[in-house]
Image (tube, rainbow, N blue to C red):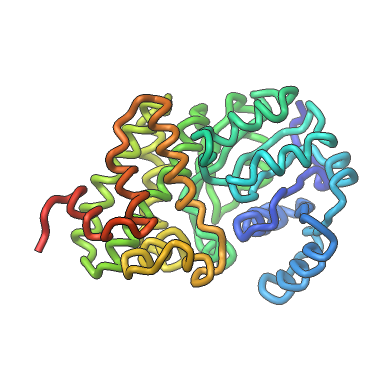
Length: 330
């Protein structure tokens, strides 16, 4: 294993806001990073947008050439929407090398199976080494990172040397990282927190105030801790940066798409209208279904998850979720 990456060895797969934020962090340390786009048109269009909004650094390159990019890289940072994981891994597979290292930055659970992204990787890329997989999660609102505001994240891997390599290319005075060997906990913390965040947004949409919102977050968070723990995570991990830290930042920030989605649901907007109103993929809505699948797999009670699904699908009044969680309210 190399002690350090070459500046040409880093590729962000997924032209997302979070992917761009990570690219920004990496290039700040004078590393070169390639953002892999779906096609030439997207690469050109996104380059123009980043130049206007984020001052595209000469250290950030956009490309749609999968073969060339993967042939030159050591590290792939996965930031594409979680529900596209299998599709994207199958596209990458012909060019994937067993020496490639993967950092999972997407936060979600597969809707159809309830599986984590690292599990999907090992299924779709059987020659990928488990020790070459890591996952990052924490309170990381992309716009705050761009603005130079400080935060921190936890990076999980079975290989602490891999973590140290990642720390070397990502960490700065404004972005601290911490090590964990609990990749299950870090992945589930980052994914399941979206369920709580949507619920917190529903509280906002119902104008219930911060006191009741805080009560809802506490009770709903305890439910995702139970799910994650039963699925093999360390509850301490879920109660740390990847779970609780991310939940708090997302549940109270106007920048959070999942919180905004919940707010719109609380205001009686249909699920189908959310993407039009918000303008981006809302990971949490699919994560709720993934959490149900996961809960069924581990034989965990799905009453809370089932009600979340009904509320998000406009089959039950949003106030019923609050009554179920908190109790009867005036």
